[in-house]
Length: 103
Image 1 (cartoon, one colour):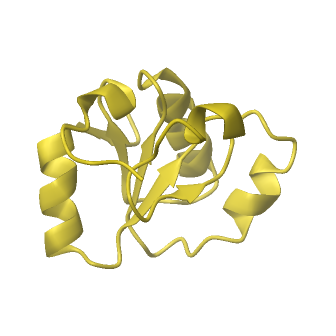
Image 2: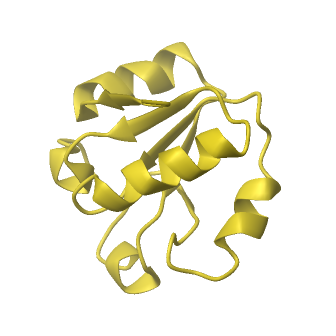
């Protein structure tokens, strides 16, 4: 596996310990409109522009990806690993396992 599954609590801790960590929401705009993790970038996995948007990211930074259940974000982690990203995390269980406020 090219990424690490983490819990919502571990994500909060990671954000504090690694302020350059980028949180990426790979859900659709309709899903995002129902609330997202504060500060998360939105890069919809289903968007045809997904490869280009990922290609523009800094490969040196740590990335935490999430979706509704953890399935699409795991796919996105695998894709990003194939593109040379090495610090990848998947929010296990998706946004439902984020016990903090959303925006």
